[in-house]
Each structure stands twice: as structure tokens, then as C-alpha cells.
Image 1: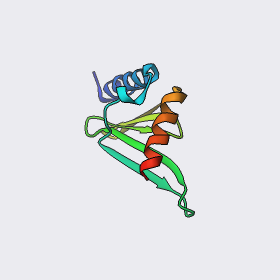
Image 2: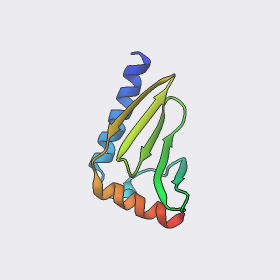
Image 3: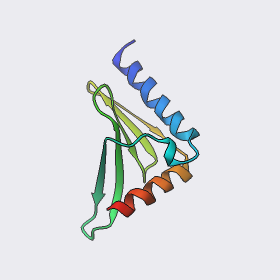
Image 4: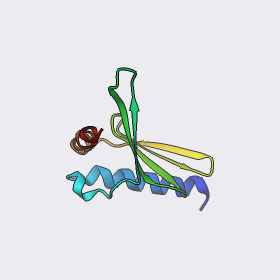
Length: 96
């Protein structure tokens, strides 16, 4: 299996996992939380880093996208679990 296939397996598997979650308590804690902020200090995006290395997997809460990067390859997949994304956004926004 090559890097692209491995990356695809991991990212698609994560997206499917997030699609099936009922609440954020079922989600492992992120390794890092990144806040992308506008000049007026409003949050534009919250990015949760779920894994580092082979591959690095990040969940973009506003975009509803999971993105994986590995060995120069990258792949993005939509996550349409709006209740989960909203719950996570509200939680991490409250910590900002």
C-alpha cells in the first residue's frame, strides 16, 4: 500500500468515525487546538489536531472538514455531522 492509499484509509476512516458520533464525549482529546482569529478578535476557524506524524490529521470545525497530510500528500474529506461540529465549536470557543 502506498502513501496516498494509507492517507486515504486513515482520513476516510476518521471522517466516517466523526459522522457516526452522537456527542463530543466519544471523541478523543485533540493533541492541539489552533484558533484562527480576525483582527477584531473574532474566531474565524478552530482547528483540532487529532494526530501528528504518519499522518497528521486535523479537524476544521467551521469548514466541517477533516484534512490529512503525510509525506507531501494531502487529502480533505467533508464531515457533515453538524450537531457534533457545533458542540465542539461551542466548547472550544468558550475556552478562547
